Image (cartoon, rainbow, N blue to C red; front, top):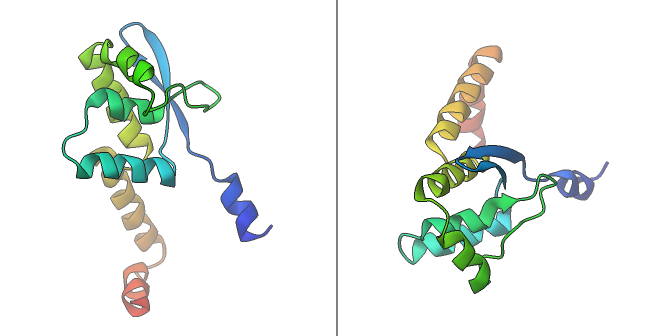
Length: 128
């Protein structure tokens, strides 16, 4: 399998999120979606409903909202704030942007270094 095949097979994870009215799904950000989020953040604090639109999806992973469609954004503006918060936090977590994700990555890195006899950081330093 070539590198392009491997990359084509890499798809964002889909995760269920329980909100007040039931279960919705969020999909981790792709490279393009993360760039869109970063552009939104660069312009200031993005509105929660806009961030939610970046990741809300069907169980299949197909995005449910278009962040540039004013009708979609208006629909999301009417969602309860605490539900939007749950959605956004789950989106950040599944995308590796949340604090919990950072902690898990650090633990995995420590475990990897322990399993390799602590040589992982020396190899990284040598590579730089």
